[in-house]
Image (cartoon, rainbow, N blue to C red):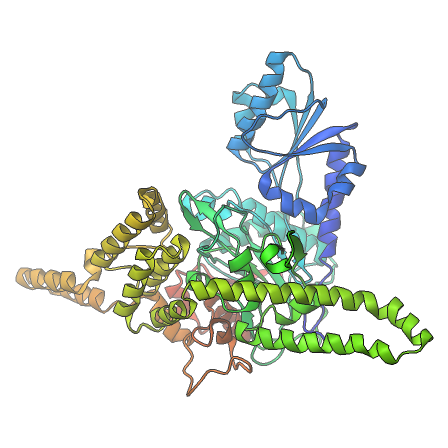
Length: 634
């Protein structure tokens, strides 16, 4: 969120407009089917829909009953069915089965399919193949962006990561481009845009094509978002037991204060990859760089658009800030969390919206967990002192207290109790998981020390069956930081994992390998293989190829090289001060500065990619820098 009290920091734009637009369009689409109707909603659209239009709003527009799209057949007496769904082949077959079953029984109904955020040709083809295309009407709910907080919006596309990075399916690029077009049309042209990664560049180029088609519409608008940063980025999920919706992309629109900033590794949403768990996420808060908002006509100094895969390491490290630990423990879904009986101290669960409106959460969300208990304790004493003030009040003062302060104090007290309960649950869970030992192993992997000891810890973690997700995460972190596992370790860890958690995870390893998260070094990357190759080349007297062999021998992991270039591993004399951190590494206990945040900081400080050529090369390029409507190379 924007930094309260800072005059050089502009407020973010009113992202509530996005909600109102989405709500109005949905109501319009529902009213196209007049009369009472039953609404069938796809599971991963339920939470976003609840943020846009709750049940009472739907009832006002003649929605009679709500159903979840699932494998069971629908039993309803309604004459009109409306389906609010994602453009998925499986869902089209589900709808076709309902329509065909009605046909066979002689039942006559009206059917309307509302695709969100857009329909694909493949869906229409399936409906046609199933013989129901003429029986249904199709519409699009252009719900591209959901505001999760005052300064963060998300696309909430659960299948984006799998489709693009695993399957090579580019269909969602159009949705990203249209989301950017929506932002541009509502808040004026972006002042500057920076990006890196193939997916980011494709999204930007398609967005520019869309803008050229409708350029006249946005002319003369004052920009409300200054800078936009596109970055391919991804995350491996751990800790969940069921597949949930992940973010297809997230935009954080915030403001850059002067001086060193802070970063928080934010919430994580998860996504299943057939037996494994792949996730792409958003950076919950990233404040870095030195480009202030002074003299600007924009309300948000910059925006960050995160898609996936430039920065897996940040995603794989254990979270130690409060918001991240809440997500790891309870799963934050669509900006809210369900606190169970162990937190609420009752037999009921409570759904809590985690945003800036929660005065307790907003103050601790980005704090290192070691500081949170102290803050909550002090907050409790302050609240008690405010309650105690009423003892010396006269009747008039008591009346003012009750009418103006009491309700707010009670709400704050309720939230404080919930967050204290959440902290206690987090502590219990992390204590059982040998959390400190895990953090130590991660730090060793990041720094490149005691790799053999860390590998032994991972083996022990697998053998003890602590958590299949945590074990996978540690293996992936080892693979990425070491530029792949040596064949012996890869085979050993894979065998132990399959023996501990089941042979069905063979597909998990296959998928992780395809996306580059858990790979095996080729023979040419090991010391003995290169020595053998050099020996053969010397025998053949192929002098030119000998140089290539030695280059292969000297090749370093990209992560190690990037880390060295950008100084991602802080060098601190003595203990790292987590209460008064000097850099963004505090989000990982001082061991590692998030790569995503560091790149954003460097690009914004330099106002482009000049001077970062080596880093760009190590990140596989596809960088771009755009000022206004003129494109420029990075």
